[in-house]
Every structure is written in structure tokens, then in C-alpha cells.
Length: 487
Image 1 (tube, rainbow, N blue to C red):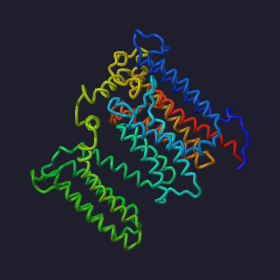
Image 2: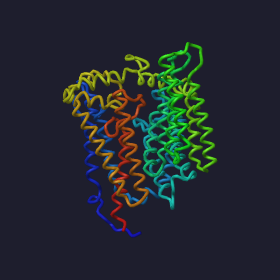
Image 3: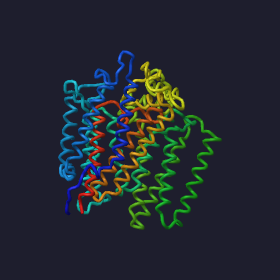
Image 4: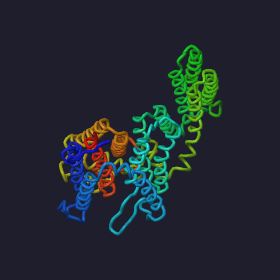
């Protein structure tokens, strides 16, 4: 491979940089609006959040400049070392970080606080890109897939040990990247199913239909349907599944009719057993097909059905004994099980009020009443979007949404034109992480996802957040420039 010297500033993607600058500056003004009080009139006042954010912005731009000057090959050469360094830093953080709002995730160095979990995201992206760029790497082999999962779940578990659940969940965004690189969609289906089982089990846990628990019947019914549909999808010769489909449909229809029109008395037979027995019988049938046709996917479908049952019956234990009390309350509030506008639901309730009061065009810059009176906690960090909604209204909220969509689509476009697997994989990692943050943050601000405490990229106040997203993005822009250096 030959290299030629090029002018970085001519080849760098200025469209992405322009979007980045618009978002950072818009975020800066939003932070000023969220933290503004009448005794602090200047946006450049370093005693306020806006003035402090300006320092972070300047240093972030300096970081971006340095990143673009570094040779692109160095990011691949040192990818593993960067990952190891960040893992060690996560381990150290568990033991030395002070307890701040219930988590031990911040390293305090005088007036500066840094959160290693934020920086580990780009390190993990580099490590995954490095391993997937290996000679004849194939993701679908067990050994390779296990290695990639190890790279993802090691920081995930370490961050959970810091009691920083929101930051840990961000690492699930890497599964979007893995799907692009050849991971079977079945894994995403399993993940989606687990979410559905969990929600149905928790939401309807206390509802009894006679002798049947809705919190068990509904998810097990869904699991049985999904197992049958998946069997039909993969079964090429459909003749020997014909009778199974008829029998299953009749049994399920009769079960639903009994529940609706002939509700069994309390303490009588639990109709959830119909779903359980159906899944067990289907499992036996799939084992038979797997042996007969020597096709392991049938066995995997059957195991999925059994695993679903195990998961459904473990939800209560996980919810009551593993999740922290504040996580339990947040989930219950998000699912509408608990109405606690003065407690766990306060943040979201006030956020909705602020966004709704903005109307179509907003109240104007620095004119928001909810934000000025500090009704919304964390309104300049995790809940910065409510400030935008109140001051700039629907139009401003739409503008922020469009910026993120354009940025993510632009990154995907750049990733698809890369000449190396390393650059393409890293680019999709960037897009996946930004999408996860954007979707979950706005979702929790408007009350459709639980509050897990993750920032809105480039908008939320904080040096760790801004630095980490800047590093994440500009490493990819430097890799994109390197396309023109190779011929």
C-alpha cells in the first residue's frame, strides 16, 4: 500500500464539522438558557455553567484539531492499548471515585471531574474495529463473535459496578454495528423479545384473571406465538408443520375465549400452563426435526422458547432483588404503574410541562418560565432538551431532531465509502452510539423511556461528555481523510 501526502483541511468532511459546530454552539446557548439567573447576565461568566462550558468547547476544538493532525494508522496501531488503558481506568475508578448521587463513576482532580465511562466508548469502538479488521475475520464464527462480545461486555460490567446503569446501557448500541457487519437478526429479535417479556411481566404483574396471572400469561403467550412463527419462517417443507399450526391456533383461540367469556374462578387452573405446555411440545417437535434434517436452527428455535420461559419466570426476582429501588420506581413510572409527580416522576412531569408550554414557536431565548424558575432538575445536563422545547418550541425541537438525523445519516454515508474494514466498523460504531444517546435521551425527557441519566450529545453540559463525543467523531473524520492517502 502506497501513501501520498495530502492536505488534510481540503479532504476533511466539512459538512460534518459544520453540523458539529452548529450543535455545540446551540448547546452552549441552551445551557446558558437553562442555567441563567438574573444575577448572572453574561454568557461568558466563568462562575456559571455557560462560561464553564465555553472552556470545555475551546478545549474540545483543540482536541479535534490535534486528532486531525495525528496519522490515521496510529489509531489502529494503538487501538488495543487505548482499550486496555481505559479498562484499567474503569477498574481504578470503582475503588477511588467518591460517591456522587449514588454512583462511583467520577474521578475528581481538584476543580476538574472526569467520567472514564464516557471515554471508554471510543476506546471500545477502536478495539472492535481493530479485531474485525483482522485477516479473514468472520463475525459469525463462535470464537470471533465471543471475542467481540467480550470487548463490549467487559466495560459494560465494570460500569455497572460503578452503579452507573445509564452509561453501561449505551454499550448495547454496539449491537447495531454488529448487525451491519453480519450478525444474524435473530439476536436482535431475542433482545427485542426480552424487552417485551420484561415490560409485560412488570406491567401486568399484579393483575389476576381469575386463577391466571396476566404477568405470566401474556409474555408466555407472546413467547409461544413467536416460537411458532419463527419455526414457520425457517421451515422450508411446510407440510409437516401444517398440523402443528392448526393445533396451536385452535388451542390458543380456545384459551383466549375462556379468558374473555368464561373467566375461571380464583385459585382454579392457571391458563398460563397452556402456553408453557405448548412451548415444551414445540421444543420436542423441533428437536425431532433437528435430528431428522440435521439442521441446528430448529434446535436453536426450541431452545429460544425454553429460554423465554426461564426469562419470564425470572423477571420478578430480577426486578425485586437486583435492580436498585430508584430503578424500580423509574420503570414503574415509565410504564404508568405508579403516578408519582412529586417523587420519581417529578423530573419527567416538569419536563413535559416545560416542553408543552413552549408551544409551536417557543417563548423565546431566556424567556422560559419553567426553566428559569428551576422546576426541572438536571435541566442543563440530561434534561437539556426541555429547555430547547420551552424556549424554541416545536420548531426548535424539530430543528435539533433534524440535526441529529442528518449527522447520523452523514456518518453512515461516510462509513459506507471507507476502503478499510477498520474505518467502516468504527464509523458505524460512532453512528450507533450517537443514535442510542439521541433516541434514549429525548425519549426519557418526553416520558416514553425510563430515566437512565445519559446526556444529549453536544448539547448537555459537561466536559467529559463533550470531550468524549468530540474524540469519537473526529477520530472517524481523520480515518475518512486517510481514504485519499492510500492508492
